[in-house]
Amino acid sequence: MGTSKKIVVLTGAGISAESGLRTFRDADGLWENEPVRIVATPEGFESDPERVITFYNKLRNSLKNVEPNAAHHALVKLEEKYGDDFLLITQNVDDLHQRAGSKRVIAMHGELLKVRCLGHGEHVMYCTENQPEKCPECGAKMRPHIVWFGEIPFEMKRIQKALTQCDLFAYIGTSGVVYPAAGFRQMAKSSGAYVVCLNLEEVDGGYTDEFIQGKAGEIVPKWVEKLS
Ligand code: BV8
Image (cartoon, rainbow, N blue to C red; front, side, top):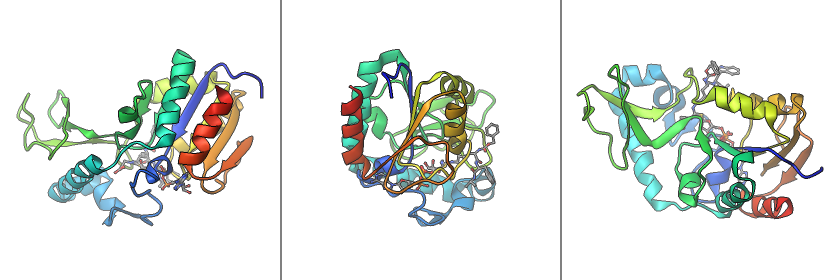
């Protein structure tokens, strides 16, 4: 592998596991003991908004008890080295990448620390505690600023552009089950990128040139060292 010019990294719940946050799969179809179809779909929110809001308030408040780990910090180092030639895309809705110092990060599934109103302005605002009842800007009802199943992830155009232009694509701590993120490695590979998987276990589905097995907190800093 020559010196890579443009790097795109995709992360999933596995990168936050060592910070103490449960992964999606480990919850075996439950998401923090709640059925995914109730707490991670628009229909679920429609049918029982209170239950969903309580669920995300709990998750949001749990962020106070966790810290970024060595893998999050290693990706900040990589960004500092590659600057505009580096892009981090995360499926995670926690704020650990941002707290570690990542700036060039797209939270494609939204962010726990943001809520938005259902008014025509869809005002998005930071929220570190419980979601406000009504939008302070327009008085409309509010929802978590999270991409639920059946909703379109954020910044897909920017993501697709980066995937077709990168020389190195790494996916870290993700089982490659959730689309469209699960399709990113195919997009990168078919545009000529070298594809690396860093994960606790092998991920099926091909389009991968190198697999580095282990816990993110150990293998990601070593991988970044090699690139620096
Ligand atoms: C969309 C917010 C249309 C909620 C999330 C049938 C077939 C294919 C696709 C579909 C289908 N039916 C429906 C779909 C589409 C659907 C989908 O993919 N469903 C799947 C389940 C089949 N996708 C959607 O609906 C998406 N929208 O498709 O819109 C569209 C799209 C583009 C353009 C036009 C139209 C929306 C998906 C977003 C859903 N929201 N999160 C919330 O978080 O509360 S997804 C949720 O999944 C989380 O974000 C989480 O990040 C993600 C789970 O995936 P992973 O991050 O990979 O986590 P997981 O636990 O699975 O894996 C962890 C990995 O880490 C494991 O491999 C493990 O081994 C490893 N690991 C564990 N510990 C460590 C470790 N690795 C290293 N170190 C460790 N210590």
